[in-house]
Image (cartoon, rainbow, N blue to C red; front, side, top):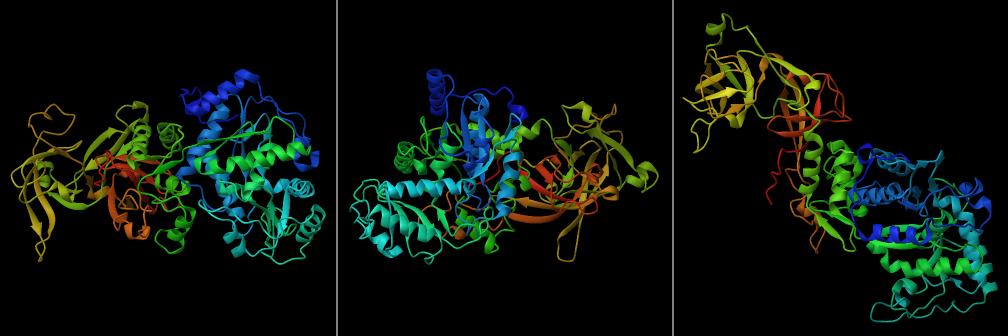
Length: 595
């Protein structure tokens, strides 16, 4: 099975799920899974006996939106557990709601799982599945429940069903249709299948216990009528199974050994077991049956992961689409410049517990810095440009057109990446905050009378500045101190307390640089009663015209760099072109966010 190359020999961290899997393997050696349906129910069952997978997990997204950072934990956990214990992880689409599902999401989910470094192919077989492939079996399973007196067709209105369900302090009330005979219910259910009733006119419900303390056991819905074209089955069906009915059946048909899901499904586990147990009793499934285990979900500060709220941000234009680099969607994080390795490292840092965890955004940025520090090439960039004029240049070198060649390592610790070549001329761009006309205490960069070094170049002495009619500084003036060029015998002749980055005006590459910050100003923007939109950070995206060193003139989209002094940047994978460079800021060299 393919998996991330940097995880070839994973260090197995202890957690309760590993303990469960190791216990199961110690007891059984290799869990067996049987299938009691007909081979036509799922193509992979017709292909032959179960391959030699010790465990079998699955990542089961609903294709009704884009994956976000919370999904990354489930992806890495399910695929990672299968990898670590000689198993297989399925990528399965729980596509039971055609009104909200689209092929666009199916494609995007596959792309993001692969981007994170995981592969659902193993042993020469694809382990890509769809709930909709099992619709025939699910329908027969539902008919069995009806004939066994374990399900009935309810014709109450949605409002009546909601009112009669009760709440945590009040038991539910039996439906007036609950005691119809199995024959009557079967006829009604077949009428639903045949399109003889309107959408919403009736539903199929399990017959469990309307007084159960667990509200999920109060006769949950199994099927509803929905005339909607399905992305996979077209218009074959006008009834569709509910997610809570379909999901356990999918696990059983795919012979999942460990069904790993987040804590919000814990209250659904009794129904999961009830359903599979009764289908096994009816001979539709065989033991041993899959078991569900819940773990705490990953919550990242300063973002929202609710699909509804993410869609609202996109639809109302608060962000620029699902791949906006400020969003916690994986497509957005990829475009921002986060690497698969950094996301996997962040997931590993959260551990696996039985409680939901809040992870500070700075942990993700720290993982990104760790990943890129050892491999991102360096470059100089000026993001808030102010011109610096070297007034004695012509006198010193005989011509204002003279250039002094300079170089620097592409990476200080990877000599095989070579050298960056650039040159110094009589005018350069520097950062605006590298000059203060009246310096504050402790300021060691440019101010009248002070010396500093142009990094990789000469020591210069500031002599003043130029201003426009409104008094805004338009240029800094300085003179070159002779015989102080970096790398020459006189480089250390003049001691200075600072060195500043620069880009020569004559060879600067003009670029659009998008400076991204956190989308919200509070840690948990969707908690409490406040409108989460009121916490949008107005400075979450700024666009500047920057000047870059010439080594960045022809870089490919998606290439990562450390802009010296500023942080980590990536050439935008969509908009970047050699003729019009576009770079995104991923994160600074250290966490500079002020809470």
